[in-house]
Image 1: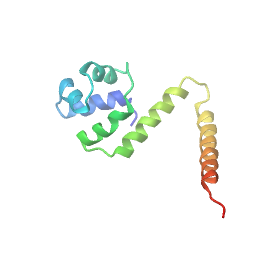
Image 2: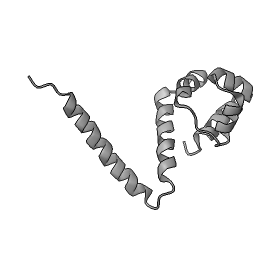
Image 3: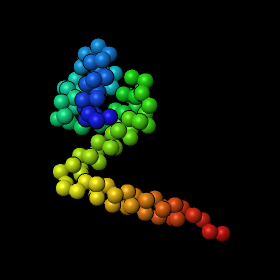
Image 4: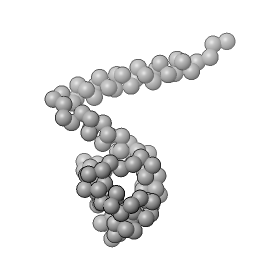
Length: 108
């Protein structure tokens, strides 16, 4: 997904002929909150993802991945070398995961 998460939600809503009111009610959020999300003035709350997934019959893991990708992109896009940051972050994530696995080992 190249568009922002808000733009994606707007497209889903429009393509399905839904009003802001109807979708906001289905997601259990304010209509004004949904409008701000669609217009990029507010971030999508993580807890909305399962409801969005269920309502539009979308894969929750795909939505969560797109959500996280957008969060990472928001952090790194102002930087001059985002690719280097991503590479370093990937190495850090692997280190953290490995360290977590090692701490979970039980030696008998």
